Amino acid sequence: MTQDRIAAYAIRNTQYALTGRTALITGVSRRAGIGAAIVAALAEAGADIFTTWWRPYDASMAWGSRDAEAESILADARSLGVRAVGIEADLSDPATPARIFDAAEAALGSVSILVNNATHSTHTPIETLSAVELDAHYAVNLRGTALLCAEFVRRYPGGMGGRIISFSSGQAVGPMPDELAYIATKGAIEALTLSLSAAVAAKGITVNAIDPGATDTGWMTAEQQTLWAQENPFGRLGTPADAARLVRFLASGEGEWITGQVIHSRGGR
Image (cartoon, rainbow, N blue to C red; front, side, top):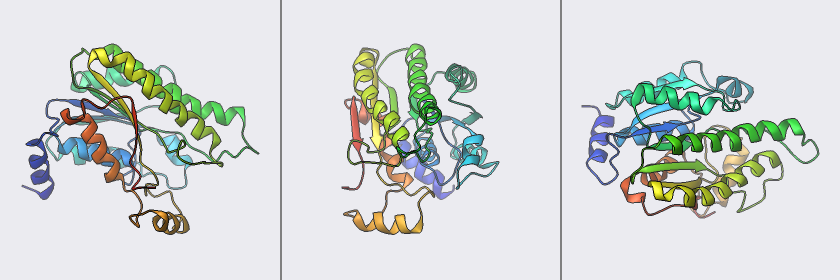
């Protein structure tokens, strides 16, 4: 038995076990990303995994992703003894959320954990802010997320155990003046989290958002890495695994009394 299998076995025999449940995680295309860490954390706990990715967006980013990277992340999850499949999906298309859930249910059955990890983010200072940039961010970060949530709620059969977990970016903690379109849509996710949690509690669904702070997923310059690590009380940056462990906790039975929260998991900064 490999060390990964041993670790997974240990987790599946704790209160954090997710055996028999299916998690849908969007935006899983890079091994260095938070999405890949979430897949690993939930698979270790026994959850079956369905992922989405969108290569055209990755190709437009400086860090990019390799052609087979999304599939290799799924292969790693399967090596832990769970089922894991995924599809390429454009969340800017309003019809995509229903197609995602159709595919997930056909492959793995009913989804009980939705992790809204996919995001659209480009440099948008006020001097160059445009309708095109605003619409591109809105289509993925807010509309795409909200429609995924709606699809999840409509299909969830009820009973304690439903989980919606989204990602914020700390825009309520400090300014991000060069990412105005991004922070506007992420601020909307925080607002959605609170009100949606009240709307779906009777169905046994919790709704929370995570602000992971400055997380090293390969997009930072060396100067940013040094500066932000020095500014953090722990003297380091956040890692994808930091965020993934919190997702696993919220997804587990231990997180069933936490809802409507934006959790600032930032290492004290």
